Length: 115
Length: 113
Image (tube, rainbow over all chains, first blue to last red; front, side):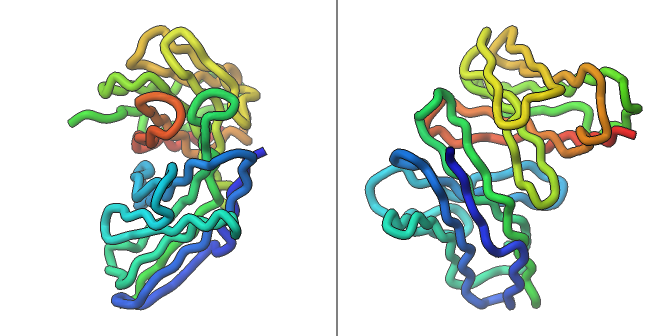
């Protein structure tokens, strides 16, 4: 069965500091990996995705993530955090097995940005 | 603006009552999904539909039913609500299965008393 672990429930960083949010996954085949962001009272918005090819993927809002198969990880990074980045971040894994794009989400990491 | 519309935005419902959460998309996406979001548990898939006329069970389908009569609409029904169904419900769609990203609605906050 596929699963996603986001070990950090809450993270606080200062504005301008770098950020790394951790994500580890379990999937029996080649995974499709996603990062989503959720602002309060809103649905989830796609930040970036990895399907194949270059293991470093660029997303919106200056975010990037690196796929490391040997570590089963897909960590999200940003060199310099802005106050508007405060939100909840979800990592998700999916693929073609079992029919349908049935993504499995992690439990999320709540990001707080200190000014 | 193209996207997913969910209704109602929020609802308080007495236990035992029947409730249908509505979801409509105007992107002509083939696949649609219902997730519930609970604190500390992330999002869990309730039901999905790969195309109009077909549905499938997700991770937590018990107590819920769905239908997909056409491409645009994917209602979620609670036949007899229980307090454990208190949650925020998100409808999502994707162009097709596989690597298409999900587009989410803004959610329905449901409280069952």
